[in-house]
Length: 189
Picture 1 (tube, rainbow, N blue to C red):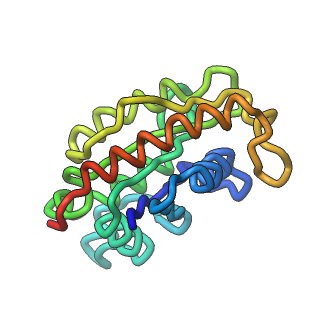
Picture 2: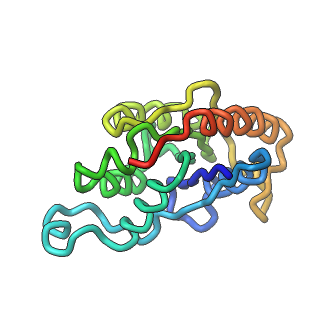
């Protein structure tokens, strides 16, 4: 069995990116599971907090899940033409202490998808992640992309994708991404 951790880049309960991850989970091929995590409960990064109390519990739990996973799929919103601060904050915590970066991220097959209610999609947000991913040493999946614009018309009130084009694009992304993860499973560091 191949396990991928999905991380929505929003805290909102009705997040379009959470909905997108749920649709991606349903589209995964047999033998591949997308386990959706949360960044809710991750405090703002504070080096004083880290020095005084160590790594917070929600961060430790997410680090363990990622370290044990075969891949990670991030669903990123786009805020002001860039990555969302809450997700960047979570990644910053996940990279603490720096000695943990190889165990958690190095060689990890990573995909990025995204949805936004705006018309610009999440192209700029997805691109703004590239320098961060380079520093973490992940293995990015570049063979496709899912950029959902006008998300309010793509999902119904129950969070299901109702746009056939989005369903097709998501499936066309998920299947090769899952194969990429299976091909590049890393050995546990």
